[in-house]
Length: 186
Length: 415
Image (cartoon, rainbow over all chains, first blue to last red; front, top):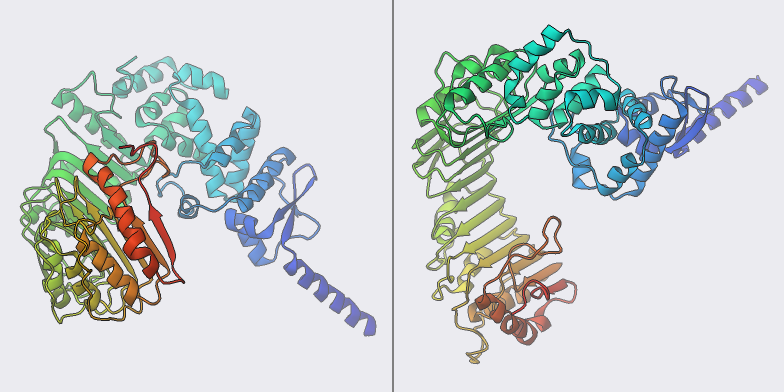
C-alpha cells in the first residue's frame, strides 16, 4: 500500500511538474526532439492548443509523425521568434479564420524568416503549418509562394514548382478560351 | 496540398490566378473555388477590352462559373462603364456563401424574386443606382447583415431599415446628398456615421457611437442630440463652419469620447469662440477623452500674442473623468488658449495632454514618407503657438499628466 501511495504521489508530482513547465517537447517523424514555449505553441497552433488543453502532450516528446525534423525546426523557430516579437494588431486579428478575414501583410521579420528558406523547405513548412493549424504561419508561407508566382506564365509556374501538366491539348484550349480576358495583354 | 493551392491562389491577383488555371487541373480547381472575386477594370485587365459588352460578358462568364463553390467576397467596380448589375448573377450558390458584397459605379435593381443571401454580413454600395425602396427589398433578403456602407448613392431619399436586421450594428452613409431620413427598426444598430443633416427616427435610443459631418454640426449636436440619442458613448463631429456652441442644461450622460474636427478651406471663422466648447465638457460628466482637430490654411483668430489683455477666467468646474486631451492644429488663438487653460485647471485626473501645432499625418508615421503639407500661414503660426504654450499653458499642466508638445517637422515643414 505504502509503495503504491508513493507511486501515486510521484505520478501526481510529475503531472503537476508537467503542467507547470512552460515548454512542450515535440518529436519529428525522424525522432528529433524540439522544445517550444507552451504559450506560443498554444497561441499559434490550434492543434497544439487542443493537445495541451486535452493533456495529450507527452513529456518525452509529442510525436508529430507527419512532420520532418527540418520543417519542425522551422515551426519551432517561428514560434520562438513570434513569442519574442511585439504582437501587432495585424497578427492578433489575423487569427479569425482561413480565407475569410482579409490577409494581413507579413511583418518584416516574418518576411525575412520565409525568404531564407529553400524551395523544398518552404513547401514542407506550408504542409506542417497546415497540419498543425497554424493560420498565421500558413498565411505567411502561402503569401511567399504567391509572390513567387506573380507575373509568371503557366509554363514558368510548372517549371518553378515542378508541376505536371495533366491537361489534354483540347482541354487547355478550352480553358484559354473561357479565360481569354486574363490573357489579353499577352 | 489541393487546399493549400486554393489558399495560395486566392492570394495572387485575380487575372494571375485565372491564367494559372492553365497550369494543371488542381490550379483550375483553385480558380473555380476562388473565394474572393475583386472585379474591376484593373483586375480584369480591361485596358484592351473596354466595351460594355465585353465587360458584361467577362463578368457573366466568371460569376456563372463560380456557381456553388463558396464565393465569400465579391467586389464589382465598373468605373467608366455604365453597367447594370443583374440580380440573376447572384445565383443560389453565390447567395448562400457570400459574406462581403461591394458594388461600385453601377446600377443595381433588386426585386422581390431575389432569393435570400444567408451569409451576407457586410454590404457596401459606392456610387450605385439604387433607390430606398429597392434597398429595402434587398434588406428583406439579407437578414444576417452586420455592416452597411452607402457612399454617394444619390437615389436614396428615405432609408428604412427593418427590424429583421437583428445583427446590423453599423451603418455608414456618406455623400448621399439626397438622403433625408433614416428610419431604423434594427434593434442592435449602435454605430452610425452620416454626412449631411439627416433626420433620425424609429429605434435609435440604443445608438452608442455616432459620427456626423456637416456645417454647424457642433452646435446641432449640442442642442439636439442629448434628447434624441441620450446613450451616446462616442461622438465624432466634423464641421466646416460653426457659429457658436450654445450653453444648455441638457446632458450626455454616457459620453466618454468626443472628437471635434473642423476642416476649413481657408480659415476657421475667427468669430468662433473656442471657449463655447466648455458647453460640451459641462454636458458630459463621464468624458474621458477629448480630441480637437483644427484644420485650416491660416489662422485669423485674435492671437494671444497680439492681445496681451488678461485671459478670461471661466468658473471652476470638476472634469473628474477626463484623462486624455489632444488638440492638433493648435494655434495661439486667444480663446483656444483660454479653453486649454480652463481644461487643465479643472481636470484633476488628466493622464495625457498633447498639443500639436500641426495636423494630419507625420513622416514618422508608418507608410508616410513626408508629413502632411502645411500652408505658410500655419507654418508661420507655429512659433506663436509654441510661445503661447510656454507662456500660458505649460505651468498649468497637472504634474501627474504626460505633456507632449509637437512642433513642426524640421525636414517637411521648413518655412
